[in-house]
Length: 452
Image (cartoon, rainbow, N blue to C red; front, top):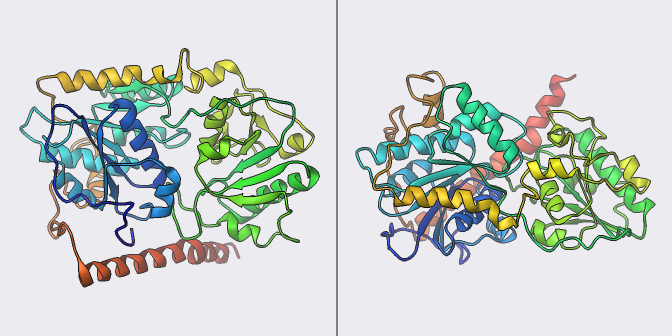
């Protein structure tokens, strides 16, 4: 974060546990993971005091991104992983929710296990996934093993998660089925008329200029073919911002090069996805979690097949959904009909009210909170089981193989002020700018040279 803002009050003093109000700490490393973490915290501990920690890195969300997400905290600060481990006292919080990429979760599990060593009274540690799990299933799951609760967003995911843990003889009792915390909103008022089409883009899928330009062109052509429809191209971030995945080729730049410009009924939009869905009659995407949000509301949803059905795109996850379609079919007026059984297995239209989807997870957390003592955190990966993998993961977050801070990772001052803060923020923004330039300009150029 470039500077402190009224939107981001700093937390410098570790709070003490109070019996009346549950206290939850959420550590997140991107805008979407903050959204998932904060909303999940309120689902698991309604009425909680929520302290947010944004893990410092390439995807640390900006104030604009946080405003767009809309998930609020009682206090929020940016922090290094090593300082998070130092600051989360075992008696300060009831629940610690790790909403980060797998490697960061693994590092925090080891760091917290070391910091809380010898104490039976500690917070309940929860983690999970922000959306559809279509790649790196084993890798991501084993990096999350060791948390007290590993949330699965659907029955489908819960079965897969347990199978992975059993496959390596790891305890699978931590896996708890729930649902995505940001589903909801008003059901779609279904009519035969499509007035608003939303193309929800993704930062990293597809990953090359030709395919991204193709999808944009087809969205623009759809608008031209249907002048009575408004086509909204829903963007995730502005150029220079990062989200959960790196966006090397922002659609904003591609749109600026569309011959003749965008038609009057086609435009780029930002904003909270829930608010965009309020006026959507047809959702179009490659494999975004937005598809699940729209399906939950009963909005006709198309998962594009134009570029093939491939694991690299993530649209293979929607096999059997009834949602797979091409732009040609959509141009001709086709509206996909989802398969009810597939949708139910994905936690989108679970039996009973949506709120009941969190009952089991809430009960598990309450059971753990009521226990006199909790066993030490015990990740599957240790210096013995993964001596060539784990040390590098921990070192990236300033921890040694035992979970202690590495030499040279001295604790940061709680509240730099004045010129010191200005200098720190200026250097950090310059470093981020250089990184973004490398990702968006230099790296693609090097790849093109390599193809000559």
